[in-house]
Image 1 (cartoon, rainbow, N blue to C red):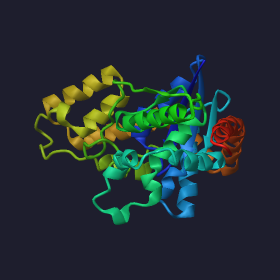
Image 2 (tube, rainbow, N blue to C red; image 1 turned 180 degrees about the vertical axis):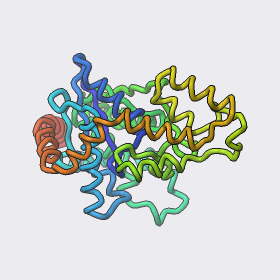
Image 3 (cartoon, one colour; image 1 turned 45 degrees about the horizontal axis):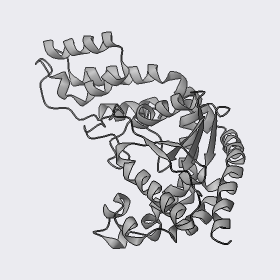
Image 4 (cartoon, helix red, strand yellow; image 1 turned 60 degrees about the horizontal axis):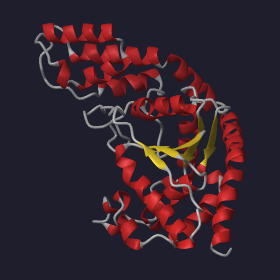
Length: 323
């Protein structure tokens, strides 16, 4: 049985891109009886940018609620909050003492902001070490990652291999990346990849009025209502195509091509489709957010399952370096 591990950012609420690109594929992976799945909310990572306590707590609850609302079964997966495992912070220090400066200086998470070093804190610089510990301290075999996270997984393997070589022991399991070439790139309301960073996302868990406002903000061109339109260059059509049946997609395509069909019509159809597609998830999300004690209970139970594994790997590493 392979141990699969996935980290979930809690820098904000989960949006449509997260659901289609990460949540649903991860739940499918977790439901595979051949896998032992660990899923954690990376709330310690969020401290590099979010300093407000209330915001962080709300983000963690909303992130957990989104995954649970989408069908994550905590009986089939170890689902926990990163900060509930203090061993990860301790191991980050030990592993950082084995990690060369140039490796961290070459990390995308640092290089992307290195032109303005006043904005770079030490946590952001050693971010890849904490990420490596998230993986290594659970003896993970497989880590599903997007192409943009491939470097971090390679760095994790390099760190683990270096420790094993220097200590002449198999302290760490070297994880393999699972990078699906077919991972969907979900377009945002402006056509770029949907992202909280770009503020171009659609939050399917919003109240109807706010959700409709987001959908109606999708950027389109100025082609008049009566003129034919190109569905293949339209953000609204692209998003609709990710959720609708083939028959409905073809129907909208023909509406675009014959004219007399405005972008407002397409956005309204997308809004109604989202309400229908995520009807149960939206209801469940609202119920969970109104019972935060249930979310806390599930996360605590997950941490109780994860912590003995983390403790064992940490002690294995500590013993090898004389602690």
